[in-house]
Length: 428
Image (tube, rainbow, N blue to C red; front, side):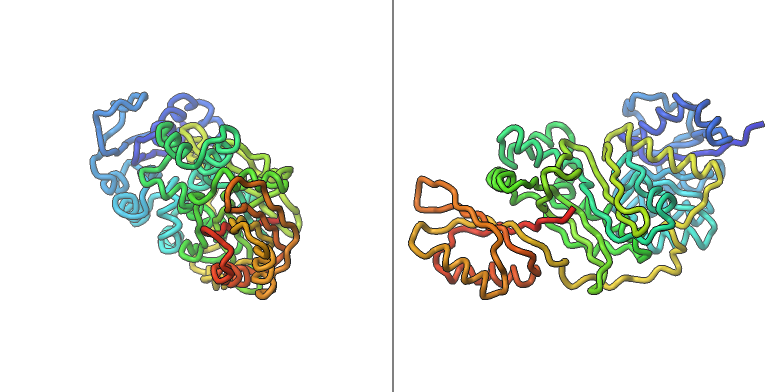
């Protein structure tokens, strides 16, 4: 007789309903692949009467997800509620305390509480899996913990928020500004309940912190991620970057340096011909670099019912197969906190300035940059119809503190109007 793995699912939104659909539709296939019957025994959600497009009457219902996590007829607790604290955290802790394995898609929960949760799970002999928490349907967690286990990872980078990539690529394609595309994303349902989680880089920063922990064998540290959103990017920036052969992306980068662990989620310029430069729409891409494998590129749907539910099922199937790995690839009790890098690695930068149309204006800007050790690689002045002159500068490689000092000195020149825009140019 085939052994049964009993599941309790908390959260029946888009992803939760998608998981139920796959389990019902592919029951035979999943049993053939895992050797076990995967069976939902109980579910929990805020509303019992809502139509979710899938029958739920055959499952026990728990109003309280903590009660669901503690049921005797649940072997694996599947947390799909979301939120870094509250019911999601309480139910996950309850499941671990009750000796249940946990599968979650909750990047915020793990980015903020991953270390103690991982320690508790591993001390109790349970596993905590979260493939769906990073890059939707892309199996990047499995790639790092298993496929690249023989590599010393040198850098992790990627586009990990489809909403931001959609806005930036649509700005270029439709000639609409940021505000118009932000509103469009709201109408399409692409934004989180708190939109700043998307456009402010927070959602993607959670994901980067998780990948950095696995890649470099350190405690997850979201607080050390340098964050900058895309709200200040204009159509003018996109056009100017294109003139110089670049695309603008909200890019996450994590790497271990002599100055500590560098983690940043910021708008960057990438070469238009690179894999990242060719990434359009809501698609995600993660690039992993290892000392033996070199560079590998993972590309796919970063959100949505099907891709994210697929990732949840991959974790459930691994548990059914008896695959049990430490949460972050190494025993959590042995992970140490990495010192955060004091500043980003040196790089060239894109600068957009608006200058007064008067003799010597460019010379004063060049002097302010030069006084702070910044050399100009390229400079371009654009046609204008008024007294403000748009100027684009690409610097040679420089340290960000030097650039910040130069930017702080620009108002004193008396020729700069408005706020300069400075974006890093990433070597990909």
